[in-house]
Amino acid sequence: SQQGEEDPQALSIQEGENATMNCSYKTSINNLQWYRQNSGRGLVHLILIRSNEREKHSGRLRVTLDTSKKSSSLLITASRAADTASYFCATDPDSGGGADGLTFGKGTHLIIQP
Amino acid sequence: NAGVMQNPRHLVRRRGQEARLRCSPMKGHSHVYWYRQLPEEGLKFMVYLQKENIIDESGMPKERFSAEFPKEGPSILRIQQVVRGDSAAYFCASSPKGYYEKLFFGSGTQLSVL
Figure 1 (cartoon, rainbow over the protein chains, first blue to last red):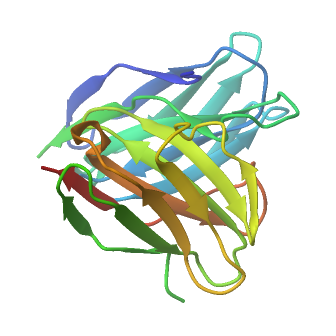
Figure 2: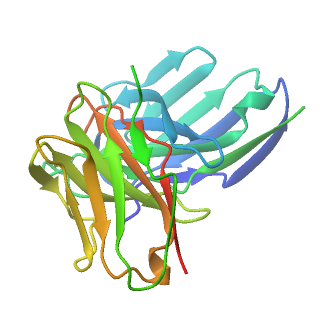
């Protein structure tokens, strides 16, 4: 079953602007991760935030996690054309048994207009 | 330090044939995961393996699909008697630890069933 759901499905912004993507999930988690996928390629891990963390930074990326709302956001600041890709959140449900592995949403397709 | 290697990159099979997809994890990684991705969809978990063991196969179809990760050699995802609905991109990922840490993905195998 789908755990993470990204919003919006697609986002188009001008180069230099900030891009914000959201992810909502249904069950409790140990951690939440964000990945990027360029067209026709495998996913690349961007950042992992644990359930006891509220915010994390990595370069131009900022991730927040609100476990009370079961949601996370990914902010990319000062966007570049090379940031054009699909972005996925992934959760590992804190179910103990780890069933269904790391589950991914359908992604947000981000387009940066030069 | 080579990344996760998948081959072949593209595989074309006729209905009823067998498809074998190979995955060599990153050096030092003993955990392998297989995912399937349909166009415009997120990744669907299939199976999680460690050396010689299947840890979680909750995402594997009950028939025609099998996976192994032998002591020596790559992990193999095998699809017997392929049907058109099996056409998809199949991604392998590996990690140095278990489920909950970041995954390193290969570039995928695009399976086309004629």
